[in-house]
Length: 501
Image (cartoon, rainbow, N blue to C red; front, side, top):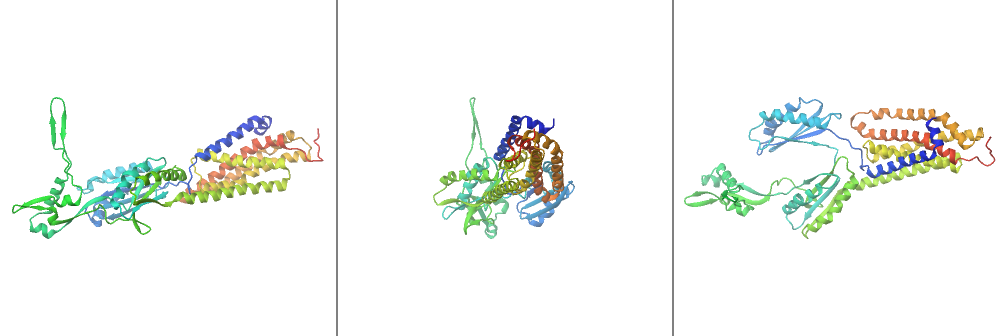
């Protein structure tokens, strides 16, 4: 007894098996991540190092060069690029696409440790690295702005409230802040005034550091308890810093404001961002690799009213860019095309077969095959995107072939040999089973070059080939199980025809 005969003789088991395929596909559809394009991970590691006050040339020769010499010994590197600025160096290491990013990170960490002896001793911290994916663009951009509220207050709200809250949401990888205006006191030195009072830069730096130190002053202890003595000596604004006494000259104190210009400013006054011609703080939300873009955007938008209620009345949090809008629109168009394709296929089948019950059989086989493919996509970790939906749309014309071949052979036995539907289904499925298998295998073989394609383009279109291959295999299984079973129960002789007993 072959597979088709088993299913024909046991219709309940066949129906339950098909229902399981459909239910699994529906569950997978609800769980599959939604994105514009398939996930393509570029194994890129970014290394950052800082040396405050150093020129770009010094950073290149003293920091970047020793690191790059060690990185060059790592296997599987495609390219190394570096960018040097005042006090900072950024090195991007791109590995081959088949390189494991975690193993590459371990090699980079070892290379940084080997280069540590060759780096300047006065670096505040050793170089750090992080794994990045250049293909990951922010899914949502928010603009925090106001005409009256200082940008430093808005930046503090973004850093302390918005960013930590959004980072805890399911699917959010990180929240980046562009145009940050973190509050800082800026001291502009007057060298002539310092020289006239005999104060060196080192003395001034030591006085500022000592006055702004937040350390315990001592302890009080008895038999029952021990208390730590602290004093809040930190300076909070430019006025407090300006009154700081640096030294005594001729019996008079020399204050910081006498030899410098102390102003309330920001830590980086060379960075800024605008929205509609107004200075603003821009927040960029990035999703986790396997997260549903549309669902993550919906979760973030649900939090915006809560943030807006905590902002001052003169401040606003506006939506700058939403990637889910284009994704929803493109997926809606593809889904509409998919539904239209299925409808046209059904009409073509009816136009040639001209039997309602005979048309119903491939009409059911097509959605079962498509929905079953969604289950395989979930198992393989794919996503619903333009590429996978394109594969499903193309598959409509392929998955219907097996059902039609099986159906036509069964109808031939009924018309030419006068057999009943049950006997025709048994004979027709027995004859055509190997043919359907060979047709499906040959179709799958066509997509083997796409499955094995390398590079970035291969990574993207690999999902297309996998979806089409999966749909062909599912349709082959449906055509060998559900289609002959339905034919044995639904087909009838046309008027004027009689079955030969």
